[in-house]
Image (cartoon, rainbow, N blue to C red; front, side, top):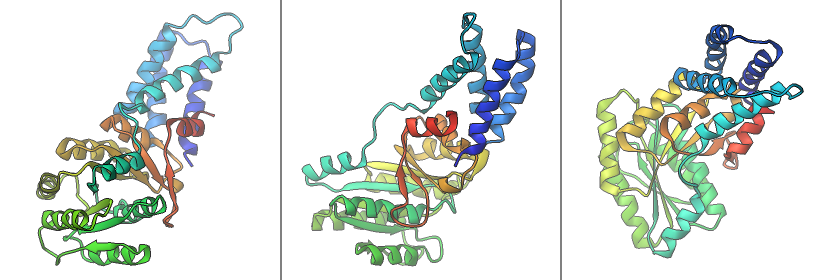
Length: 301
């Protein structure tokens, strides 16, 4: 997992510590270092920011005679990455659910993201996560656009033993979401998880539809589901969804298949919102909590 990004950072550290670089040589190497990160799915603006910051900090560093230059480079890389990955708030789903339950209201979570990113499966995993911790759940089949979407969610609902609120295909998704919230309130269900159609970030009609769902149900949380294998498009996708409806956090799927690793850094850079889980397989249990220390251990060790 993330082997290519780890190797890219290792090469950068090696380049900067095994050669005595003049400012001119350092400038010439910048493009090569940016390219190395971009090839690992770090979006170009993010790669450029990392390298420019690294150059700036190294130019201000006074290295003593016997100091380990590689450790100095690694320390600056870690500081830069921590600054990128650190977000304004700590994010604890269970704490948020407990706060809502204490006020006798359901926690309403709206899931959004582009086509094919594993949103429905991720919703089922989150449902399993809440059930495992003693919270009741209802699912809303608000993807009334994609053929088979309702049936797919119903299969998960049956396996998990939770109710799925649905309408017919072509129905108003906002009405489905509203009915699910109303059902949760009347039955004192703790959590409402709303599935939505896979929005292409360039499809204005579907973006408007998503914004309508958010207006109608006023969700407590809006979670972006992104694909670790998306590549350099990850930043653009996350930015457009965040600008359109505002997101509170992200879940990154297919992390177990991602040998590059840059998409996670790009999404956090774009949204300034935390990644809370990584999807690491097809089972309901395959949902790994994400932490900055875990990622840095993977890519800088």
